[in-house]
Image 1 (cartoon, rainbow, N blue to C red):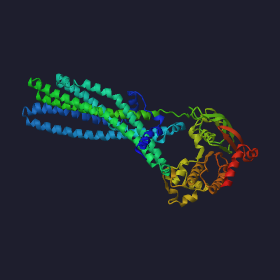
Image 2 (cartoon, rainbow, N blue to C red; image 1 turned 180 degrees about the vertical axis):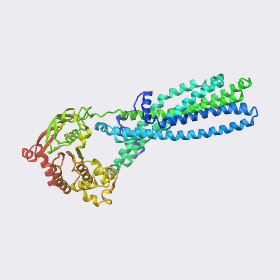
Image 3 (spheres, one colour; image 1 turned 90 degrees about the horizontal axis):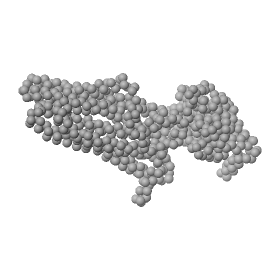
Length: 609
């Protein structure tokens, strides 16, 4: 591949991995945002927080006391008066103070670290829990990698703020106030002279704030896209290798990685301006101190001990200012991350529960679609006034071409979405009036693309019913024909499977999903292309088992392979979100309509093979 082609590939990433929801969030930097962030410290306001502040207070008192002892007592009294006994006492006292300062610092660092870790733990738990209860349209609009970045990286970015930033801000702010008061107490004229540079320094740093904040927002944005691309690339690695697209994929990654590097570099460069500003201010202040302080000493307007004390405090003055500059950079990073976190926390499910939802302790399984309309994006209509009645215990099948609305009907039954118009009714209750948890407890869904979690085979089958015994798990596996292949695995039911169950065949994964669904003992069973990846022999075993297990349950079967739905009580043929025809297999074949055409085309394909 030429250099020109590689460059084009790098530039193309921004179009391929662009996510509209990841635009930089332009909210003003205000204290309301900070106050909201500080709410997460409240649970520790009576334990860890007072302990940390106590340690900070001891540390401040000791640090302020030592320069006064050295200048006003060690130099002006003990050394000048040659009082050696007092000098020894003062030295021992200063050493003791340094030891107390060490203990206070050690306790402070330990306490704020625990405080920070617990706060981050609470925030991440709340964010993950909240995201779990958001509606499906939230996940339709966002990549898994983008969500992952906010739960992991953005929350991690707040760690430094919670562990050190907040305590240091308060400590340094109090130190600055105390030092300014002491400086003006020691020598008002010298304090005014050395601090004349402060207004200019604050003006310059203030001008940088908005710019720096925006650059850190851009860093968070590009990190999100980098993670999204990486997540997609890893999941699709087999496809990448199958089509020998490693170089092209590397070029895409190189492009987003280069952009990440550039934005990080710019953000760090702008943030680094604070340090030199503080150093320059310190240098100018020191020059003024030496020049003007020498004049005051020569004119006997200031004692040497007072000058030394003043010099100590002036050196201490620039230290918290420098730290506050660094903390401000941390604050900007934290604000950029918190804006993105709160954007998720402010999301509300579009599928909402009623204020007093009806809790279904038991379900019969009667389903009614009453003139249901549905659209995913308010433009393309997926369902047009669909009316269906499914009696409790009935098995109905939904057939039709891709995009006809089959899976949409299944999604509405589980209330992953709400109808745009019309009603979905179960056991006489509008789904909008039911508790989501109690509704979904009685529904099991088996999808074509079976998801296997990291863990053992036993844990995967038990997922929908954690309290089930090992014997019940094994029995469910036997019923669906999964027991034999599980027993052939190295550790049987204790075999560890990685994410998505890559060590299992597609058919084996689907058998596990059948066992998982049946163990949950649902009143409504939805099979969405559930036998698509199972060979004919295995399918026949499953069909035999399902004939017994589906008795007393309402089942919705979605299938392109029409041989799996011959025994359904009612077959509904859909096209472009409308019902073309419905009836049992014999009735529809006799009509010689769309269903007959679908059956005939599949039969012809089998004969050709």
